[in-house]
Amino acid sequence: MLRCKQVSKALADKKYWELPLRQRIGLRLHVFCCIVCGPFNRFLMLMQDATRHYLQHEQQDTPPDDLRLPPESKKSILDALHSTDRNDHGQE
Image 1 (cartoon, rainbow, N blue to C red):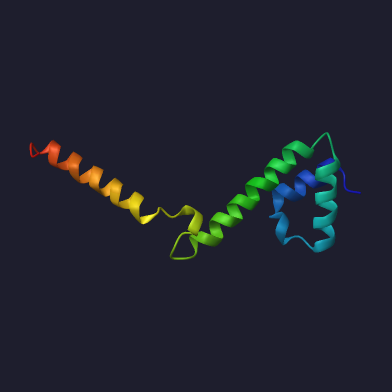
Image 2: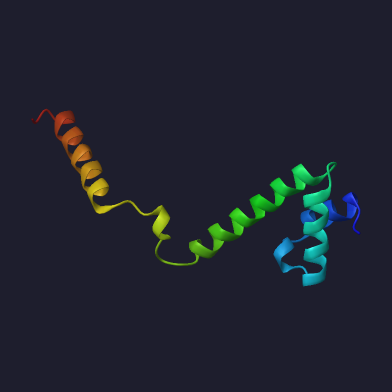
């Protein structure tokens, strides 16, 4: 079984999903069972997952569906911006 120091170093040095399968399993097992380093390293793994997810979608031209505004929301925002713009120029 891995020690806390080894787990923390592995998570700090590399992206854990790029580690060999055997190391990933050992790392996850330690992180989810350890009361000493587990909470911090679980948070670190969560941040790495979020970063990986963001980078995958950053490389695409379109954002994922859960990040897109519905068309009616876009229209209401644009309408509000245009009405504010007209009010700033003295037009109503």
